[in-house]
Image (cartoon, rainbow, N blue to C red; front, side):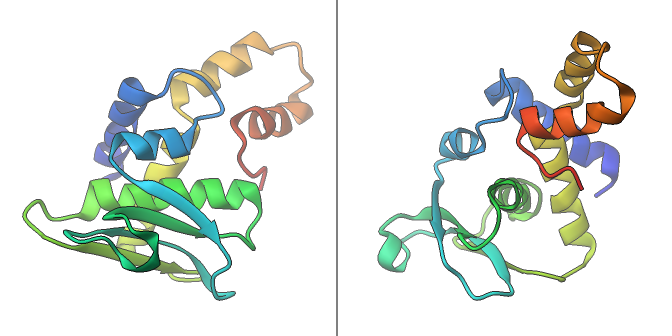
Length: 156
């Protein structure tokens, strides 16, 4: 997929389900039928998403996203958005099961696409531009930190 199409998909999701910041990513996932769980996963694992015909394991739900409770809150938010991106961008329409598991350090074209989607979902361009315009009196060096704080994302 090209970047323009990925950004467009994130914008479509935002137009439908996002009206304030920080983006309530768990609520967005609920709109697609997903329940989000936070639990301790192996150190190298960020999270995973499953969409199946039958309830999955101990979760007793068919659609779920699980993120690593060991990660910082901003990282967990990104992982949730990233996993939703995999689902919306990469799930084949007729498949009975979709599962994806992220490990830290993993890099592929699909991972980059999911990252682009997550970034644009958590920081919708229109909202970021509006925030910056409304806070133009902030010294330039403080803007990125302020944006990170109000959008509940990492500053790095």
